[in-house]
Image 1 (tube, helix red, strand yellow):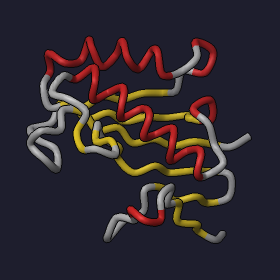
Image 2 (tube, one colour; image 1 turned 90 degrees about the horizontal axis):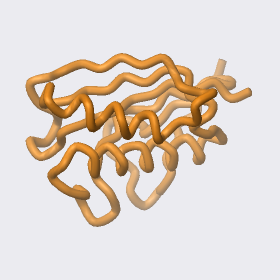
Image 3 (spheres, rainbow, N blue to C red; image 1 turned 90 degrees about the vertical axis):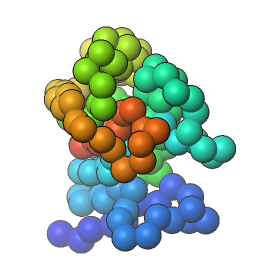
Image 4 (spheres, rainbow, N blue to C red; image 1 turned 135 degrees about the horizontal axis):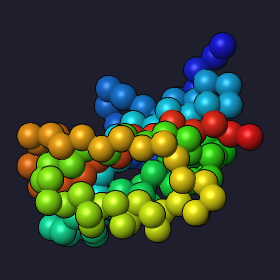
Length: 126
């Protein structure tokens, strides 16, 4: 089966990885962070989580998927105390009848020290 690299904005194509890879009706989304068009959105986990889910939605849309197609997410948090804020934003990001399977890991650090949250996803397009 052929793989398709998904790049929502060809002018901002990252080096060395794809924002997502589509194989058949499955979409594997690389870790998204709270970085927006003008850089990191803020220093609070809620702000970063909201932007992270916006970024995830943008990548999914470029692949022909929606948040309702997401079947699994994995979240990486730097601070254990941020879990509650992240979890509340996760509930808002998905409709009550399409909550995906979810794992959350507390990690020592992410790619940049200012990142507090990173989320990767798997979607199945119906």
